[in-house]
Image 1 (cartoon, rainbow, N blue to C red):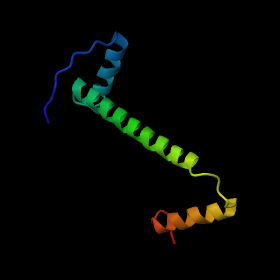
Image 2: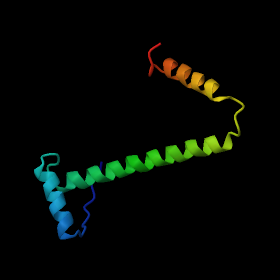
Image 3: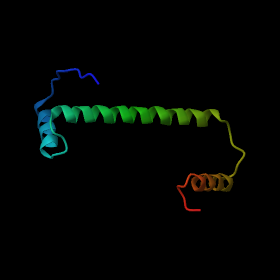
Length: 87
C-alpha cells in the first residue's frame, strides 16, 4: 500500500493528548495513533451506513400482523439457529 505524507496542525492540548497516548505504550508514534483514529472512524461510519440501511428496511417493510409473543419466538428461533443461543 502506498503511503502519503500529510501535515496537520493541532492545538497544544491535542498534542499533549497524542503524546500521552504514545507514552501509554498503545502506539509507537503519532502516525500510528492517527491511522488508528482514521480506521476507527471508517469502521464507525460503515456501521452507521449499515444501521441506516436496516432502519430503512424496517420502515419500508410495513406493519406486522404478528403479536409480541410471535416476534419473541421468532427471535429466539433465529438466535438458536445462528448458534448465539443454546438450543
